[in-house]
Length: 195
Image (cartoon, rainbow, N blue to C red; front, side, top):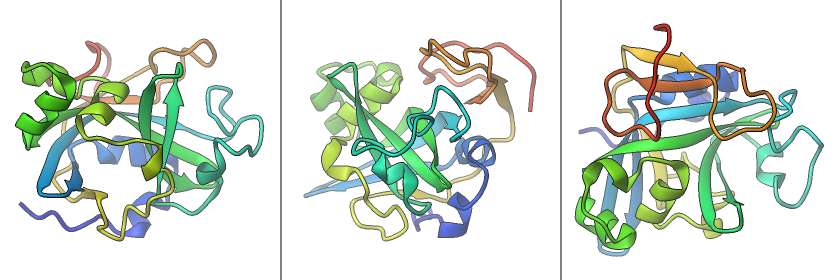
């Protein structure tokens, strides 16, 4: 499997395009003596004009990475406990990685998650960050440098379902969630049109 990082130009596009195209790609996490790899099966887009986006109200210390260049990790803490990984696309926009299908290093993921069901290891943004040991220390990391976290080529999913995003209180009907049809590893079930 080719694990070369995706180029900067992949991220330098509209976040909706990136969210759709990142489904099927491979997230790689290198830790000392351990490599963790998962296929991205679910992602959501967030744009600066979107009231659900962290950048909607302007720059803050928390969202500073989203106002930076494309191709960086934006990590934040949700509900005070869950880390969430986003990929910046430039222009104060990003893509939230919601779920992975574990491909390599599932034992380490299971140890961190304290469970063994492979379907639950990375089914949700907080779960996948726990499984891959992604914390605020990774905020701002360059995803193109092949340092310790990056997205590799993989193969874009051919059959992707588009749905409204989940867990929001505003912009709840915006169809910017993309899930590979038929996956058992998504954070939530899907139904909806093919895109």
